[in-house]
Amino acid sequence: MIIHNVKVFPSKIHLPKKKQLAWKIAEIASDNSKLNKEAVEMVINRIIDNASVAIASLNRRPVISSREMALKHLRKNGATLFGVDSKLTFDCEWAAWSNGTAVRELDFHDTFLAADYSHPGDNIPPLISVAQQNKKSGLDLLKGIITAYEIQVNLVKGICLHKHKVDHIAHLGPSVAAGIGSMLKLKTETIYQAVQQALHTTISTRQSRKGEISSWKAYAPAHAGKLAIEAVDRVMRGEGAPSPIYEGEDSIIARILDGKKALYKVPLPKKGETKKAILETYTKEYSAEYQSQALIDLAKKLKKKVKNLNQIKKIDIFTSHHTHYVIGTGANDPQKLDPNASRETLDHSIMYIFAVALEDGNWHHVKSYTKKRAKRKSTIRIWRLIKTHEDKKWTRKYHDSDPKKKAFGAKVVITMKNGQKIIEEQGVADAHPYGSRPFKRKNYIEKFLTLTSGILDKKESHRFLKVAQNLKNLKSGQLNKLNIEVKKSKLRRNLKKGIF
Image 1 (cartoon, rainbow, N blue to C red):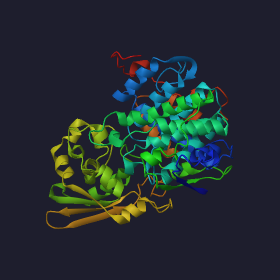
Image 2: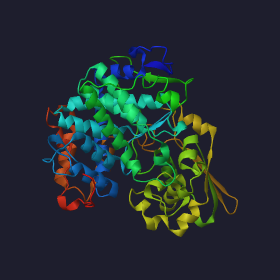
Image 3: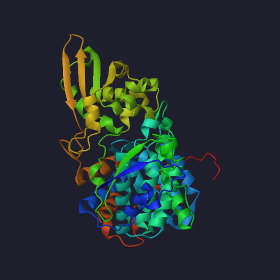
Image 4: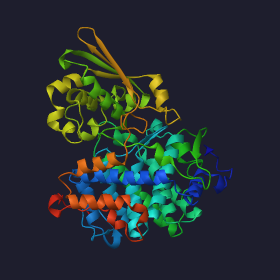
């Protein structure tokens, strides 16, 4: 790996393109490095994981709406839509929009956390859509996805967006563009311009994850993927981009992030070096913000120790800066304590999540979020006894550069009315790669079967799992087999009139 120093240059100083971060990203995307076997297998795991959560969310309102929009953009030899007959194909950017929304809706796929946050599995829907429309092979797709993960993970390590209230999809646009460029075997110059355009068009604020969180949380990464596809299309036709997009005098760094005196250190593999960043990422066992994964496991264990929940006086959670200020009481969002809050808000409230997991000793992607569940009086009582605190120790663990030491957990102190204190802590979720029972292929398949039960028939389920696990052997034009069909009668519609 090479650590690249990224800083702002005034316009009067010409910064050669080969010294720009976007060019270095493009060089990595176009280097045709050898594929790592473990990375290939992990891509397959994540394709299965994405399909699990996408199929489970097909009849949720945001996904229905995104699908209705995509259905208006039929295209011969285009890309497929989750749930829809595979003989029907659509413009790839609209397929990416709909499929990306389905993947993101339940907040239940993979994650990577470092200087910033990300769900790198968001790269997969736009890459599959472009691959299908362009008749690429399974190996082409693998190469593109591995590249996209590499770029996003390393941008997340090097550049913090949330400090400036910029949404993390600003790292997704460039990674999708780089992944598509790699998959289509585009020239370095073309990928360079696409990366810049994709970044420029995907800057948005974190209000999408603040206060009363709406369905846009699910749409945001799908929109970034769509914009990245359009950026690649434009530059393939010879168009350029604002440049230098990272280092320029009026660039994102200069005007939106740390400013003209900023210095970021972004790691990237050497040109030709095998890309393995996907192996540093982790999926979710539970449908909730990633920092809640270890705390759900912890709550399940504490339930066995707390004999009478009615005797709890207060619950203090000592955790990282991010957990406290984004999904904890440090966010100062009253909505995070409101039983009438949206599902999107509740899955960003560690107080709600911990209360339900402690009471139920379990977590369910639907039942744990119902209006009835959120309004249960006993839950509300526990919920409002919870307070989070930043502990510098946990913040350091959160940012540790060693994947084996990096942790996203907390210490929980439950104080009972009689003065007894019950104390437990946990660093990583049980399903984390360094947890007590890391997710393996069988776990991804089990998650798929659980989430699609009652939606898919066994024949279609078996067919998809067989195809996905044979991805590297799929030939040009065979990637439509990665689509999953659901009986038309099981797909809900939104027939409200729109523009399309």
